[in-house]
Length: 228
Image (cartoon, rainbow, N blue to C red; front, top):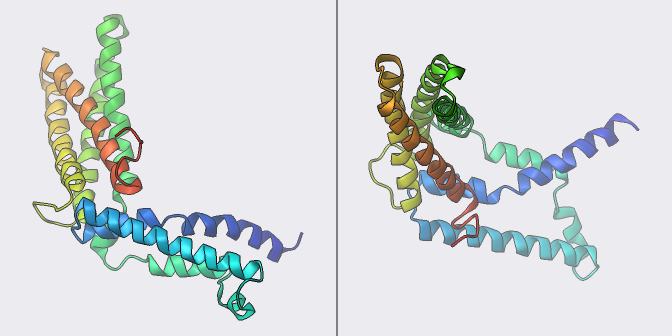
C-alpha cells in the first residue's frame, strides 16, 4: 500500500466526520449571534434540508440521471476537509478562547462529581478518611469551574440576557456552579461541620447533571434525548 492510498484512507473518514458536524457548527454560530431557540431550530432545519439536496443531486449524478459535468463540481474528501478547516478558523483571540470551553468544562464536572461521590462514601464509611481527598477534588473542581465559566462567556458572548432560553439557563447555571464550587471549597477547608459541605456538594451534583443536559441541547438540538 503506497503513501497516497494510506493518506486517502485516513482522510476520508476524517472528512466524513467534519462534514457531519453542521448542527454543532451552526449551533455555535447561532448562540454567538444571540438567536432564539425557535430561530436556531429553523436554521438547523434549513441546514439539514440543504445537505439533503446536495446528497440527492450527487445520487442523481452517480446514477446517470443528471449531467455528467456535475461530477467535476463534487469536491474530493481532501478538498472538503480543507474547506471545512479553513471555514472554521478562529477569527480572534476571544473566539479562540470561547472554543476552549468544551475542553475545559469536562474537568470540573468530573472532579466535582467525584468529590460528591467521595463525600457519600465518607458518610457510609467514615473509617475511609477521605477528608483530604474531598478537599483536593473540590478545590480542583472549583478552579476548573471558574475557568470553564469564563471561557463559556467568551463562547456565548458577553451579554446579560439571551434570546435562547436554553443558552440563558446554561450560561447562568454554569456561572452559579463556579460560584457555588468556590463556596464549597471554603467549607471543605475551614469548617469542621460537614453538613454545609455535603449540602453544597449535593446541589452541585444536581446542577452539573442539569448543565450537561443543557449543553447537549445546545449542541445536538432541542429534545436531544428524545424524552419530551
